[in-house]
Length: 356
Image (cartoon, rainbow, N blue to C red; front, side):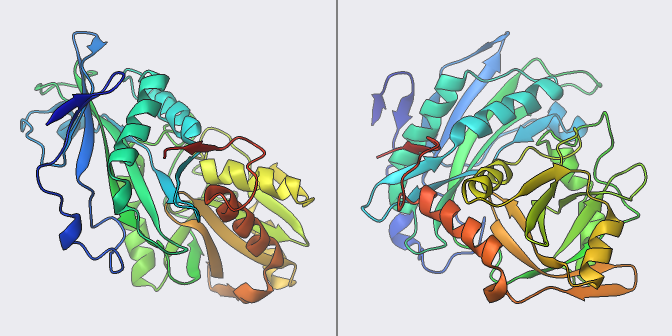
């Protein structure tokens, strides 16, 4: 059956996979909901938007995306509240960031109102896929890729924009061990570091795998020019509590403009915590860790939310940070963030977008 909302045609699946899915036992990113949003860009304009049953894609071997990586994506979540409603958290920031990525990757931008409507309608349709529990949510993956069948380096003329969702629980079930990377680089000034494009992540897989083989969950990336300054950690922005001040690297064009990062900074300021966005040298972190002034460190991102860092390795030194129960600043900021997303406290910043 096909119904039409304000702008989006909806084709419901004939048979949901939900009854066959155990939402209490799922691995992050492995289980997918019943529907997906699809919209094609052809002849210089976006075509008819639609929501259809989740299905595999058909693609030419000559599709530009497979050869030249003209693809971008986003990640955000929907949360079930205590009274049974469903909230999106700051989707406007993800929409704006994806359009910035599109511009950087020479791709068409997406109308913001239609983007938001697509998110709301898709989550509304598959809301029963949201698991129960404190760490549970519905992860939402918008993405766009080049569709032209052509072997030659140029921007595509055709694109497909899609959104699908998947029920998830915690990305990390424990505090993570990280290594400061001082050889390989994630981004350089003037490059695509702050764009959420596929190549940025593929390029980090090899050094990340090397770190995992050494027993680390993630890397802390340093600047590509000198490797003297901290940038971000794996798939997350990174924060350090130094003597009670929350310190994070400033946005300089090579660091992703994280939605969770921005939220944590604002919450910390609301809580009266001093926040510094600035250049953070590797030497500063190492000295603070040696002297016991590094009270805590954590990564922040949509998938991981707030991931406590247990140890930081640099060259031949490994610094063990205080236990999670002692991290009052990080725990407080993380709790307030979760309370806002799940509707347990007043959303004074207008971050939450109700779905149902």
